[in-house]
Image 1 (cartoon, rainbow, N blue to C red):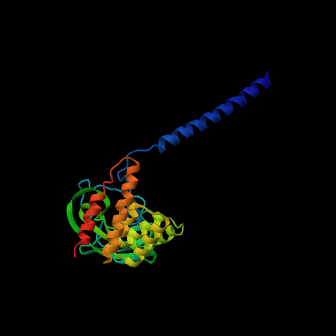
Image 2 (cartoon, helix red, strand yellow; image 1 turned 30 degrees about the horizontal axis):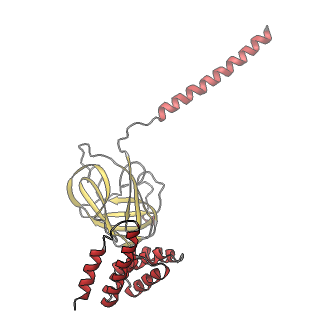
Image 3 (cartoon, rainbow, N blue to C red; image 1 turned 90 degrees about the vertical axis):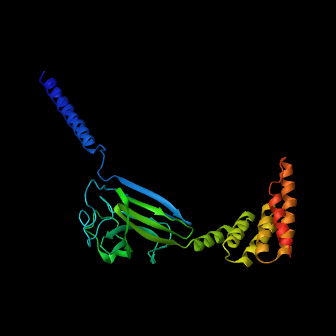
Length: 294
């Protein structure tokens, strides 16, 4: 009997231990449950030319407060958001405000002012707030003039005025907008991509390369070389059309007409096989008529 009671006591103690563990886990899960945050997290990714720009930040709201010069004091470094530091990542080397900045991830710090504001891109990315900020870790620091805007309740970063070579990164909050110019070297990246693609010696790669060079007026001699190589590897009606445009832009109207006629010939044959009418014939004939004029 004594032995049975002893065994029962041991079992009860084990059950109590298990119960305490379960209760602890339940309390921990309850405390860790997600609740609405006063400054919710936000992120975006935007391609400019061939460069990807992404940001992660938290969005505090105005809530009737005076932001600039009060909640966020003038002439004092600010984390450019709330909670963990605002982070920005560039997939390639860029220029920000005219200054070189290597590809990588940076924390963003802003120093508001009544005149020009300072925006710093800092290599230390594990901070919470601006307490650990040190200018010696700035990869780039630029001066930007803020602009007045309509009221923006929650802090917002956006990429505006996008072109192949540049865009404006805009910080907007309360009645202030801070535009930061970002420039990318799309031509350098495109040429690197072209060189890599041409290693496989594919006719489509040569045609795409020729098209890019000609459209951007980079190297017409090289464009002619690439489109000729593409046609050598495989004849295609569209390739002859590209060649016609390149030759015309280079001043060789006779050669352009010859290539355009070949494009029509191959195009009609190709479309006929699928029972369709070559819909680009009219466009090519109009180009031939234009190039035929003295």
